[in-house]
Length: 325
Image (spheres, rainbow, N blue to C red):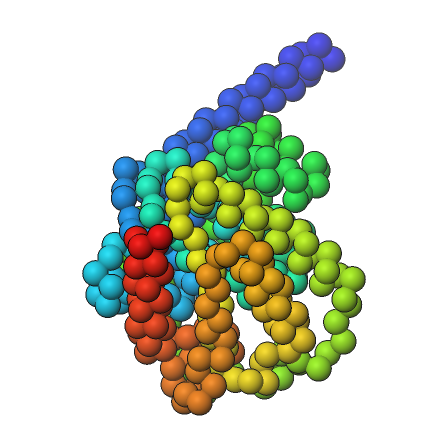
Protein backbone atom coordinates (compact mmCIF):
# COMPACT_ATOMS: atom_id res chain seq x y z
CA UNK A 1 0.00 0.00 0.00
CA UNK A 2 2.76 2.42 0.94
CA UNK A 3 4.71 1.54 -2.21
CA UNK A 4 1.63 2.16 -4.37
CA UNK A 5 1.15 5.56 -2.75
CA UNK A 6 4.80 6.48 -3.31
CA UNK A 7 4.57 5.41 -6.95
CA UNK A 8 1.39 7.45 -7.41
CA UNK A 9 3.00 10.56 -5.90
CA UNK A 10 6.11 10.05 -8.04
CA UNK A 11 3.99 9.65 -11.16
CA UNK A 12 2.05 12.84 -10.39
CA UNK A 13 5.27 14.73 -9.71
CA UNK A 14 6.81 13.60 -13.01
CA UNK A 15 3.59 14.40 -14.88
CA UNK A 16 3.44 17.87 -13.32
CA UNK A 17 7.09 18.50 -14.21
CA UNK A 18 6.51 17.41 -17.82
CA UNK A 19 3.39 19.59 -18.13
CA UNK A 20 5.22 22.60 -16.66
CA UNK A 21 8.11 22.07 -19.09
CA UNK A 22 5.73 21.77 -22.04
CA UNK A 23 3.83 24.85 -20.90
CA UNK A 24 6.99 26.95 -20.62
CA UNK A 25 8.29 25.69 -23.98
CA UNK A 26 5.03 26.31 -25.82
CA UNK A 27 4.55 29.74 -24.24
CA UNK A 28 8.06 30.88 -25.11
CA UNK A 29 7.87 29.67 -28.71
CA UNK A 30 4.32 30.91 -29.33
CA UNK A 31 4.93 34.35 -27.82
CA UNK A 32 7.95 34.84 -30.08
CA UNK A 33 6.22 33.76 -33.31
CA UNK A 34 3.60 35.54 -35.41
CA UNK A 35 1.39 32.51 -35.92
CA UNK A 36 -1.87 34.47 -36.06
CA UNK A 37 -3.02 38.08 -36.23
CA UNK A 38 -3.00 38.60 -32.45
CA UNK A 39 0.58 37.38 -31.98
CA UNK A 40 1.62 39.38 -35.06
CA UNK A 41 0.27 42.53 -33.39
CA UNK A 42 1.70 41.70 -29.96
CA UNK A 43 5.14 41.17 -31.50
CA UNK A 44 5.29 44.71 -32.87
CA UNK A 45 7.78 46.82 -30.92
CA UNK A 46 9.20 50.35 -31.19
CA UNK A 47 7.18 51.22 -34.29
CA UNK A 48 5.75 54.65 -35.07
CA UNK A 49 2.68 54.87 -37.32
CA UNK A 50 0.65 57.74 -38.71
CA UNK A 51 -2.54 55.70 -38.51
CA UNK A 52 -4.05 52.33 -37.62
CA UNK A 53 -7.34 50.74 -38.68
CA UNK A 54 -9.02 48.79 -35.89
CA UNK A 55 -11.98 46.40 -35.89
CA UNK A 56 -13.13 42.93 -36.93
CA UNK A 57 -12.76 40.93 -40.15
CA UNK A 58 -14.29 43.84 -42.06
CA UNK A 59 -11.03 45.62 -41.27
CA UNK A 60 -8.75 42.60 -41.57
CA UNK A 61 -9.92 41.70 -45.10
CA UNK A 62 -11.48 44.95 -46.38
CA UNK A 63 -8.93 47.65 -45.52
CA UNK A 64 -5.79 47.38 -47.61
CA UNK A 65 -3.39 49.56 -45.63
CA UNK A 66 -0.60 49.33 -48.20
CA UNK A 67 -2.98 50.82 -50.78
CA UNK A 68 -3.98 53.51 -48.27
CA UNK A 69 -0.30 54.27 -47.76
CA UNK A 70 0.12 54.63 -51.52
CA UNK A 71 -2.80 57.07 -51.82
CA UNK A 72 -2.06 59.05 -48.65
CA UNK A 73 1.75 58.84 -48.33
CA UNK A 74 1.22 58.04 -44.63
CA UNK A 75 2.46 55.00 -42.72
CA UNK A 76 -0.23 52.69 -41.36
CA UNK A 77 -1.06 49.30 -39.88
CA UNK A 78 -4.11 47.03 -39.96
CA UNK A 79 -5.09 45.92 -36.41
CA UNK A 80 -8.24 44.07 -37.46
CA UNK A 81 -8.95 40.64 -35.91
CA UNK A 82 -11.61 38.15 -37.05
CA UNK A 83 -14.92 38.16 -35.18
CA UNK A 84 -13.81 40.83 -32.73
CA UNK A 85 -16.05 43.14 -30.73
CA UNK A 86 -15.05 46.47 -29.10
CA UNK A 87 -13.78 44.69 -25.99
CA UNK A 88 -11.17 42.83 -28.05
CA UNK A 89 -10.42 45.96 -30.08
CA UNK A 90 -9.69 47.75 -26.81
CA UNK A 91 -7.41 44.95 -25.62
CA UNK A 92 -5.50 44.85 -28.92
CA UNK A 93 -5.06 48.62 -29.03
CA UNK A 94 -4.01 48.97 -25.38
CA UNK A 95 -1.42 46.22 -25.75
CA UNK A 96 -0.16 47.68 -29.02
CA UNK A 97 0.29 51.14 -27.49
CA UNK A 98 2.50 49.80 -24.72
CA UNK A 99 5.33 49.30 -27.20
CA UNK A 100 4.37 51.40 -30.23
CA UNK A 101 3.14 54.90 -31.13
CA UNK A 102 0.17 56.07 -33.19
CA UNK A 103 -1.15 59.44 -34.34
CA UNK A 104 -4.60 58.43 -35.62
CA UNK A 105 -6.95 55.45 -35.22
CA UNK A 106 -9.81 54.57 -37.57
CA UNK A 107 -12.28 52.32 -35.71
CA UNK A 108 -14.76 50.15 -37.66
CA UNK A 109 -18.21 49.83 -36.04
CA UNK A 110 -21.36 48.32 -37.52
CA UNK A 111 -24.37 46.14 -36.65
CA UNK A 112 -22.21 43.94 -34.43
CA UNK A 113 -22.37 46.54 -31.64
CA UNK A 114 -25.91 45.24 -31.12
CA UNK A 115 -24.77 41.62 -30.94
CA UNK A 116 -23.25 39.41 -28.28
CA UNK A 117 -19.73 38.02 -28.67
CA UNK A 118 -19.89 35.05 -31.03
CA UNK A 119 -17.42 32.20 -30.63
CA UNK A 120 -17.04 28.99 -32.66
CA UNK A 121 -19.55 26.23 -31.80
CA UNK A 122 -21.35 28.59 -29.37
CA UNK A 123 -18.96 27.50 -26.63
CA UNK A 124 -19.17 30.81 -24.73
CA UNK A 125 -15.55 31.80 -25.19
CA UNK A 126 -14.69 35.48 -24.64
CA UNK A 127 -13.43 36.10 -28.18
CA UNK A 128 -13.99 34.50 -31.56
CA UNK A 129 -10.26 33.72 -31.63
CA UNK A 130 -9.78 33.04 -27.90
CA UNK A 131 -7.01 30.51 -28.58
CA UNK A 132 -4.74 33.31 -29.84
CA UNK A 133 -4.59 34.83 -26.34
CA UNK A 134 -3.54 31.65 -24.52
CA UNK A 135 0.22 32.45 -24.58
CA UNK A 136 -0.62 35.76 -22.87
CA UNK A 137 -3.09 34.51 -20.24
CA UNK A 138 -0.77 35.55 -17.40
CA UNK A 139 -0.61 39.16 -18.60
CA UNK A 140 -2.90 41.16 -16.32
CA UNK A 141 -4.69 43.04 -19.13
CA UNK A 142 -5.47 39.81 -21.00
CA UNK A 143 -6.43 37.88 -17.85
CA UNK A 144 -8.71 40.63 -16.54
CA UNK A 145 -10.80 40.80 -19.70
CA UNK A 146 -10.92 37.04 -20.27
CA UNK A 147 -11.99 36.48 -16.66
CA UNK A 148 -14.77 39.08 -17.05
CA UNK A 149 -16.28 37.28 -20.03
CA UNK A 150 -15.60 33.64 -19.13
CA UNK A 151 -16.72 31.20 -16.46
CA UNK A 152 -14.14 30.47 -13.71
CA UNK A 153 -14.42 26.83 -14.74
CA UNK A 154 -12.75 27.89 -18.00
CA UNK A 155 -10.30 30.68 -17.19
CA UNK A 156 -8.88 29.41 -13.89
CA UNK A 157 -7.53 26.16 -15.41
CA UNK A 158 -6.20 28.13 -18.39
CA UNK A 159 -4.23 30.34 -16.02
CA UNK A 160 -3.17 27.89 -13.29
CA UNK A 161 -3.13 24.33 -14.65
CA UNK A 162 0.05 23.80 -16.70
CA UNK A 163 -0.45 23.14 -20.41
CA UNK A 164 -4.22 22.60 -20.23
CA UNK A 165 -4.96 25.66 -22.39
CA UNK A 166 -2.76 24.38 -25.19
CA UNK A 167 -4.28 20.89 -24.92
CA UNK A 168 -7.80 22.36 -25.17
CA UNK A 169 -6.90 24.30 -28.33
CA UNK A 170 -4.74 21.53 -29.79
CA UNK A 171 -6.10 22.08 -33.30
CA UNK A 172 -4.44 25.50 -33.27
CA UNK A 173 -1.38 24.61 -31.21
CA UNK A 174 -0.18 21.25 -32.44
CA UNK A 175 3.62 21.06 -32.86
CA UNK A 176 3.44 20.55 -36.63
CA UNK A 177 1.57 23.83 -36.94
CA UNK A 178 3.61 26.18 -34.82
CA UNK A 179 6.99 24.79 -35.84
CA UNK A 180 6.39 25.52 -39.52
CA UNK A 181 6.66 29.30 -39.12
CA UNK A 182 4.72 32.53 -39.13
CA UNK A 183 1.28 33.25 -40.56
CA UNK A 184 1.65 34.11 -44.25
CA UNK A 185 -2.00 34.99 -44.98
CA UNK A 186 -1.35 38.70 -44.28
CA UNK A 187 0.89 41.25 -45.94
CA UNK A 188 3.45 43.29 -44.00
CA UNK A 189 0.81 45.85 -42.97
CA UNK A 190 -1.59 43.23 -41.55
CA UNK A 191 -4.12 43.12 -44.42
CA UNK A 192 -5.50 39.71 -45.45
CA UNK A 193 -6.36 39.65 -49.14
CA UNK A 194 -9.51 37.86 -50.36
CA UNK A 195 -9.59 36.93 -54.04
CA UNK A 196 -12.88 35.01 -54.32
CA UNK A 197 -15.86 36.75 -55.93
CA UNK A 198 -19.33 37.12 -54.43
CA UNK A 199 -21.24 35.39 -57.20
CA UNK A 200 -19.60 32.16 -56.02
CA UNK A 201 -20.73 32.42 -52.39
CA UNK A 202 -23.35 35.10 -51.67
CA UNK A 203 -26.86 33.90 -50.98
CA UNK A 204 -29.73 36.29 -50.18
CA UNK A 205 -30.79 33.75 -47.55
CA UNK A 206 -27.53 34.24 -45.61
CA UNK A 207 -29.20 37.07 -43.68
CA UNK A 208 -32.88 37.71 -43.10
CA UNK A 209 -33.35 41.46 -42.56
CA UNK A 210 -37.04 40.98 -41.71
CA UNK A 211 -36.38 38.53 -38.87
CA UNK A 212 -37.78 39.57 -35.50
CA UNK A 213 -35.13 41.04 -33.24
CA UNK A 214 -35.37 41.11 -29.46
CA UNK A 215 -34.96 44.81 -28.74
CA UNK A 216 -34.05 44.17 -25.11
CA UNK A 217 -31.10 42.01 -26.19
CA UNK A 218 -30.00 44.58 -28.76
CA UNK A 219 -30.11 47.37 -26.18
CA UNK A 220 -28.19 45.27 -23.64
CA UNK A 221 -25.45 44.25 -26.09
CA UNK A 222 -25.26 47.78 -27.51
CA UNK A 223 -24.75 49.32 -24.05
CA UNK A 224 -22.03 46.79 -23.24
CA UNK A 225 -20.24 47.20 -26.57
CA UNK A 226 -20.48 51.00 -26.51
CA UNK A 227 -19.01 51.02 -23.01
CA UNK A 228 -15.87 49.48 -24.54
CA UNK A 229 -15.97 51.97 -27.42
CA UNK A 230 -15.91 54.73 -24.80
CA UNK A 231 -12.88 53.07 -23.22
CA UNK A 232 -11.19 53.12 -26.63
CA UNK A 233 -12.03 56.83 -26.88
CA UNK A 234 -10.51 57.43 -23.43
CA UNK A 235 -7.44 55.36 -24.33
CA UNK A 236 -6.88 57.43 -27.47
CA UNK A 237 -7.25 60.69 -25.54
CA UNK A 238 -4.78 59.52 -22.90
CA UNK A 239 -2.23 58.79 -25.64
CA UNK A 240 -2.94 61.98 -27.64
CA UNK A 241 -4.34 59.94 -30.56
CA UNK A 242 -7.01 61.31 -32.89
CA UNK A 243 -9.93 58.91 -33.43
CA UNK A 244 -12.42 58.54 -36.28
CA UNK A 245 -15.16 55.90 -36.76
CA UNK A 246 -16.33 54.27 -39.98
CA UNK A 247 -18.62 51.49 -41.21
CA UNK A 248 -17.41 49.20 -44.00
CA UNK A 249 -19.58 48.50 -47.07
CA UNK A 250 -22.09 45.67 -47.39
CA UNK A 251 -22.84 43.90 -50.65
CA UNK A 252 -26.52 44.57 -51.26
CA UNK A 253 -29.34 46.62 -49.80
CA UNK A 254 -31.18 43.47 -48.69
CA UNK A 255 -28.37 42.76 -46.26
CA UNK A 256 -29.13 45.94 -44.31
CA UNK A 257 -31.71 44.96 -41.69
CA UNK A 258 -33.19 46.68 -38.62
CA UNK A 259 -30.15 45.81 -36.53
CA UNK A 260 -27.87 47.76 -38.87
CA UNK A 261 -30.21 50.75 -38.91
CA UNK A 262 -30.37 50.75 -35.12
CA UNK A 263 -26.59 50.46 -34.81
CA UNK A 264 -25.83 53.22 -37.30
CA UNK A 265 -28.25 55.47 -35.45
CA UNK A 266 -26.41 54.79 -32.18
CA UNK A 267 -23.02 55.40 -33.81
CA UNK A 268 -24.26 58.71 -35.22
CA UNK A 269 -25.48 59.64 -31.75
CA UNK A 270 -22.07 58.78 -30.28
CA UNK A 271 -20.35 60.85 -32.98
CA UNK A 272 -22.58 63.84 -32.23
CA UNK A 273 -21.97 63.59 -28.47
CA UNK A 274 -18.19 63.24 -28.71
CA UNK A 275 -17.37 65.23 -31.85
CA UNK A 276 -15.62 62.16 -33.31
CA UNK A 277 -15.98 61.97 -37.12
CA UNK A 278 -18.14 59.10 -38.44
CA UNK A 279 -17.88 57.92 -42.05
CA UNK A 280 -20.74 55.62 -43.06
CA UNK A 281 -19.61 53.66 -46.10
CA UNK A 282 -22.18 50.85 -45.66
CA UNK A 283 -24.00 51.77 -48.90
CA UNK A 284 -20.89 52.61 -50.88
CA UNK A 285 -21.11 49.60 -53.24
CA UNK A 286 -24.84 49.15 -53.82
CA UNK A 287 -24.50 49.80 -57.56
CA UNK A 288 -21.29 47.81 -57.94
CA UNK A 289 -20.97 44.35 -59.50
CA UNK A 290 -20.66 41.15 -57.45
CA UNK A 291 -17.02 40.94 -58.50
CA UNK A 292 -15.84 43.48 -55.89
CA UNK A 293 -17.19 41.43 -52.95
CA UNK A 294 -16.04 38.13 -51.48
CA UNK A 295 -19.32 37.58 -49.60
CA UNK A 296 -22.20 39.55 -48.12
CA UNK A 297 -20.10 41.69 -45.80
CA UNK A 298 -16.49 41.49 -47.00
CA UNK A 299 -14.98 43.11 -50.05
CA UNK A 300 -12.35 41.20 -51.95
CA UNK A 301 -9.01 42.56 -53.16
CA UNK A 302 -10.58 44.58 -55.99
CA UNK A 303 -13.19 46.16 -53.74
CA UNK A 304 -10.63 46.86 -51.02
CA UNK A 305 -8.63 49.03 -53.41
CA UNK A 306 -11.58 51.37 -53.94
CA UNK A 307 -12.22 51.55 -50.18
CA UNK A 308 -8.53 52.41 -49.75
CA UNK A 309 -8.95 55.42 -52.07
CA UNK A 310 -11.97 56.69 -50.16
CA UNK A 311 -10.38 55.95 -46.77
CA UNK A 312 -7.14 57.70 -47.75
CA UNK A 313 -9.07 60.82 -48.83
CA UNK A 314 -11.03 60.82 -45.57
CA UNK A 315 -7.85 60.26 -43.59
CA UNK A 316 -6.04 63.17 -45.24
CA UNK A 317 -9.02 65.49 -44.71
CA UNK A 318 -9.19 64.38 -41.07
CA UNK A 319 -5.46 64.97 -40.64
CA UNK A 320 -5.70 68.39 -42.25
CA UNK A 321 -8.53 69.36 -39.91
CA UNK A 322 -6.47 68.27 -36.90
CA UNK A 323 -3.44 70.26 -38.03
CA UNK A 324 -5.48 73.44 -38.40
CA UNK A 325 -7.36 73.16 -35.12
